[in-house]
Length: 392
Ligand SMILES: Nc1ncnc2c1ncn2[C@@H]1O[C@H](COP(=O)(O)OP(=O)(O)O)[C@@H](O)[C@H]1O
Ligand SMILES: [Mg+2]
Image 1 (spheres, rainbow, N blue to C red):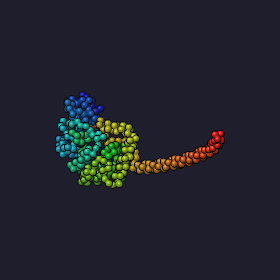
Image 2 (cartoon, rainbow, N blue to C red):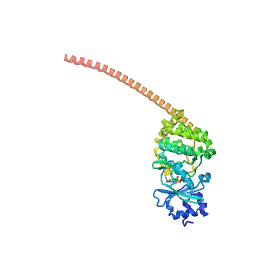
Image 3 (cartoon, protein in one colour):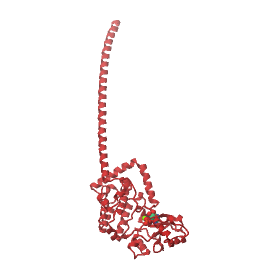
Image 4 (cartoon, helix red, strand yellow):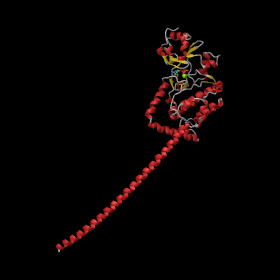
């Protein structure tokens, strides 16, 4: 047993195991390799991540063997796990560098320390790479549904998946028909790609109302929010047919230029454009606030705090409410329009009156002048006559 108390850096779930001495072997190993509490970076749900002592830009990951991979592939060793990651998924998954420790319950491996994907980095290239990783998993017939942003990072500029602890056979995944997590992750990425904002912020509604296969299907796979080539992937996921999923991803990658305007010709696309425009305008008014929210969300990602199983909370709402909101704003526009017309009419009337008054004034003025002229004319002629009289 190690002389240190590791309870505060271990995943909470492991504390009873630790306290009952079931982690004494692995903790003694960490001690021996001079791993200190100050090396600890973060604890996720299935592993503890820390800096590899004297390892430069490497992390060590202490992982429980109670993960889907070992449950579903009981004949596989940690070395077998490493072979799948490094060979089958080369270029898609962050390679396992070394396996340092392995007992019946835990193992430790090392990985390059890489930069975690930030929300702001979801661009067409990275979006396509996420889809490529997903497609690769269906092709290799082994998949992890845990494709949240904090499980991706950049290896030499290429986006890779760094958390593969939930890998399971595709057949099992399809049979379970639990595709809502993957779809929600894709909805988040698509929102960041098209609108530069996380889903909840962009659409002003909580993701929890989308948690569930029925919920997603009943809301037409978010067709009101995303273009068809993206929602077709969501629909394909619900088909639980690997071939159909792979094909829809390939089509989506082909169509995904990243620009909302390049997304197709359907009616739906018009909606998406309108929404994008609306969001842009809204953004102009609330940039300061939004920038703050964005900063907070990206910080949450970069500091690597685990988000597994947790849903970001936002405001509640639904499509109907959205439609009502749109109708309301349209009728407000009409009221504004008619008010504007009224004001203009009134102004026109006032101007008209003003002109009339002026004309009247001018007329009166002219009349006065004419009178004056006549009178003075009379006076002059009389005066002239008088002076002539005098001259004569
Ligand atoms: N190679 C790495 N480089 C940098 N950060 C990492 C690396 N591996 C994991 N992390 C960080 O640790 C967190 C937890 O690791 P992860 O492998 O996702 O474990 P879990 O299965 O518990 O989610 C990740 O979300 C990420 O923030
Ligand atoms: Mg993870």
